[in-house]
Length: 354
Image 1 (spheres, rainbow, N blue to C red):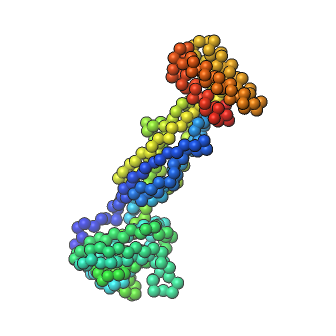
Image 2 (cartoon, rainbow, N blue to C red):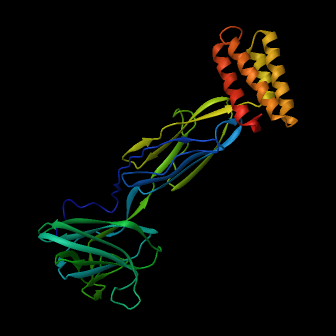
Image 3 (spheres, rainbow, N blue to C red):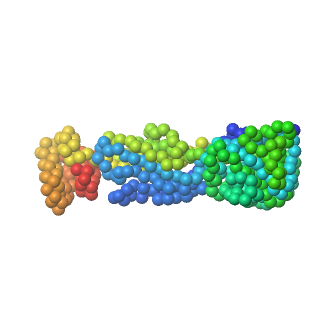
């Protein structure tokens, strides 16, 4: 019998679209993203640790944790040929998964008419004492007349499975026909059909089971000019060392092969230690008198911090900000003066960086 013309093969990948909206919050303790939901995707966390600012040469850990979304991947299937249709109000199909989760099934059905159908997943025959219902999905829809159509059932939550263990798909509800192959051999090697409550290794129903992987993630520390490798882990941690002083633009990208979305940036500041800054100032401030004044104040601030005199430490750095502001665009290049002020304020707010 000729198979349905509109059926997917076992190798097709059904893609769930993703749209992620990243919302950044900044604090002195962390740079993180609150939980958000978009099109079925829950963003559990997006963070950079340690928080900004940090010293140059710091190893920064970027973490993204997301549930939902991703790609549906066919796992087990029998997609024809078919030579019969069985029309009991309850039928079933044994299957043996290779995947560790089940998120959806396709069933090859014909009606005709509006049907209310339920797909149940059991750990053994549903009429056995002690059988456990693992997942269920009910929907009302129009089922086409012969040769019918592929009806997709997607569970509200993934059904956890043990690969290599047999499970049962049960179809129940309104009377309709489930297409099957019946003969001296069965078409699907990982199981067999159940008509009513009568298992038989001489037939198999048409079905496809799906697991979910992904979505995939990658990160950039330079505004998207280069990226890390893609990863499909649901919790992806990437460690990278940031060496260059100044601002770094951290980004996360998520893809499900159909859509790729990029997060809003995390702006991450790297500052030198005071000792490194003194060398930098001597190289970038041409007026030696101004350079000596700045570096002398930095030395005094460092000594005050070492003595535990935090009030003196803050007063010296505040005076230094005023001095740099006064010389900005005069004896100190404007851009470099702004950089110095950023460093000084970072040291004041985070003295452990000095």
